[in-house]
Length: 246
Image 1 (cartoon, rainbow, N blue to C red):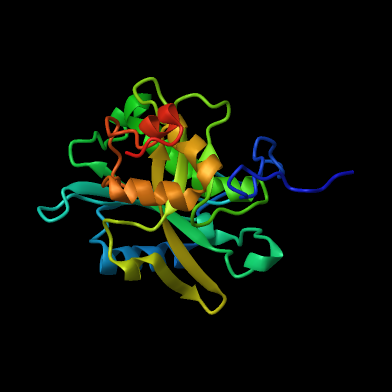
Image 2 (cartoon, rainbow, N blue to C red):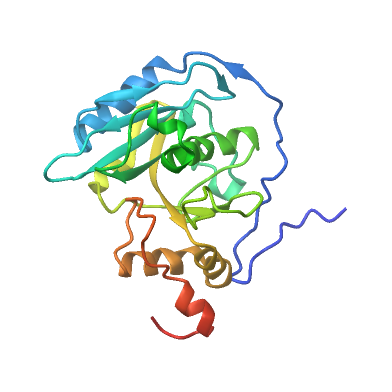
């Protein structure tokens, strides 16, 4: 049997997450110490947590979402997970210290934020994806880290109102660098990664030239972790011209 991991044209490993590796495992309540540690960390480096959107019943890990309201200086909602780092991920041997992570993103100040409004998938899809990505490494017995990309399966847009169908993990542009790491215990150092949603052409560019290339292009064109459903597609002009500079 061939156990070689396929690679993209950029030389990066391609991991398949389509098949669930772990059976459904219901869990209740989460890790109170972790939730409190994340809450303090967010309050110290981002802003006071207005509320925590708790899961009632969870699968494998209990993923909560911490909400920091917009301010005059930061006119957007911050959403940060806690629970992804309840359990260690399963990185390869050469990345054995990359075992605990949490995710975050930002939404425009005008974004509907009530649970009633979230019944509309046009409003809920970013939150759904944030939670799904936090759970993915545990249900699939894998890992997620800086520069990793994940495509929707099947590769359709996340919702009828957006063209994004994938995402990439990276450093946050809207938070202080020291927010990126939390010492949550003697054996648990948590890294926080910003979630940016990608157009299909941007994912193809990452497969061809590497995720660092796409992250650099996103930064060059001012694309942050703030969700903008009408933002510029930084891969379209390159992909259509196969090398045209943009």
